[in-house]
Image 1: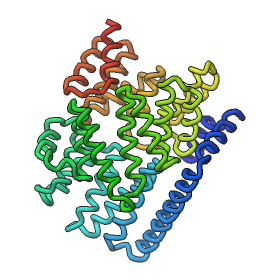
Image 2: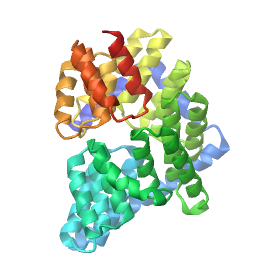
Image 3: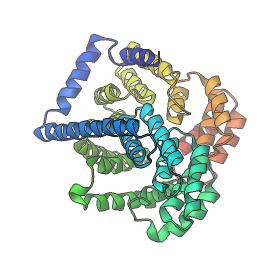
Length: 404
């Protein structure tokens, strides 16, 4: 039933009209036009085939001997890798299952399985459970810098900023180490130091690039995505374009990079490009926020019927049983005045365990859309209280205050 539902949504989103099919074909053709892009795509396809074969290989070994720990750890890591490239949440669940089975078979000296479990839980937005795994991991070696960064990362997501500060501040001398740098940068960003976060990510990206063939292109592309999204958030469209295009050179079919590039195209007044890029992203992964972007691009183009088609698909896809609480999806729905009462109730439930700045921002926006403007002002004040330099928070605050 779930597959049928998702397939139906994809058909509405991508194949609703003959014109959309033509656009998607043209986008695919444009992506594959250069010899370098074609070669990169062939190399990526070969790597993915080997990864899938490795998953099958380890599954067979586990079936023959389910009492081991190492094979479960290896297949779980491959599932997690595939999830990061495709967005398929089934792989997250499989990674979690493999990690738990590995820990059941060998609890001692199995720190890697705890790391895998924490990552799988974080990906599913099950942050309270991820904190338990991170605490367990740190308890095995309280001086381990990576374990401290992992727990700090989890506390950030839960909104425990004082707790996160206590773990990240002592890590300053080691902030440039590759496993620590992205987590440390996220802490800097949330604590009001976006420029320092950007410089740290740039340094970490350059360090990875110097490793040459030892680093996977997907790792470098992830840094370009983070830097591109950061630049786009702060309105530096030239830097955002440079970063995102560089990422797409590394991984031409990355759905996240294509989606970010679609948002950039829309922000810079190129709705036609936003539609083509967004459709290419949606062909790889059905993301409600990207459906909203393409719908907005059609609205800018003056085609309200096509826009409504994408908005309907966005609303339907957020009702599919696809996992936890996805704030980007709900923000897109609120921006289009869809399912406001339901989202307000959901964000209030979320804040019972996850009291971070983006939770309060989403609460403020849902309250504002519901007409509760005094409560919205109180919520946005809590979102701004930690000094996070995200223009989205300040834009919402300005709109809420102007309505006074």
